[in-house]
Image (cartoon, rainbow, N blue to C red; front, side, top):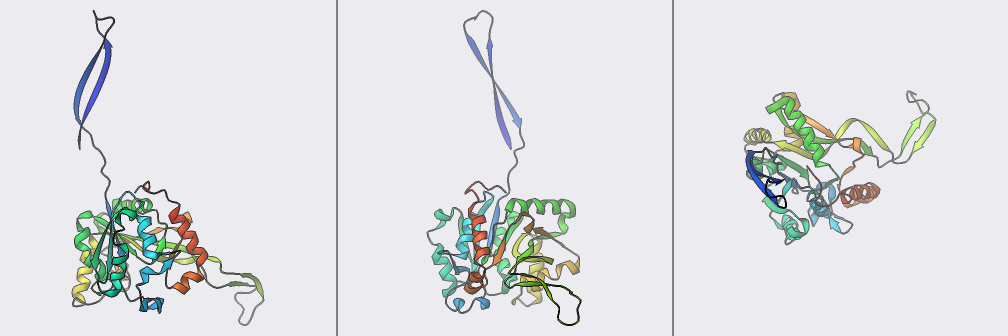
Length: 309
């Protein structure tokens, strides 16, 4: 980017002891001004929501109410706080169910603070849902994919920084970065036994009610930062399925590491005590009310309009 720099010099000239002469020197230089990439966020709000029945017999899962607002509303408001997020793209059905989401956001762009675009989910699975949004994000280089019923106070700047590190190391071999967590708040109590190796019953050493446990294998949080390489993989799978239904997790991500053509990286959130939860159903949310409240507090504590990327 070219910029013009004006240098103003005040000096006292000979013969003009009482006057100050301002000399303005105009210097034209080429200054490299870093331009921040804009990030579009794709929210996947389609699907049958079978785990959320009977609620999803009448409304989409993304509209499960939490403290008076749908889950997807909390997510959209959180994303709007990040200066790098330029647009929120919601992929949902355009039938009577999906229309509930569209109708909910009608007239709310100014309140949310970001442009909101809707793309029809043609019921081709979660892999097909991302393909539907290809035209909207292909020119951007990378984009965020977020299941609309997952809540998390994700620091997007940290996610992008991790993505850039992986890109620097592996170049065009990278498919994207998956958000993962090594900790989980259990819904049941746990016991520590006197003898874990006992063949029969053992005395209980300690009982812990609904603890936070460290997982041997981190769990995926349903949040991804992909680049354009994903579209080649998605199109290939779409052709293989004769333009049918295919799933992002089972049919794409589960097979990428074993194929070896592309690499997937992880971004671990529990190191910074960032919580996440999948709002599986109203009942699941009620059982995990404390975790949901902690996440909402983390999401709301971000300063509006000042979150960098």
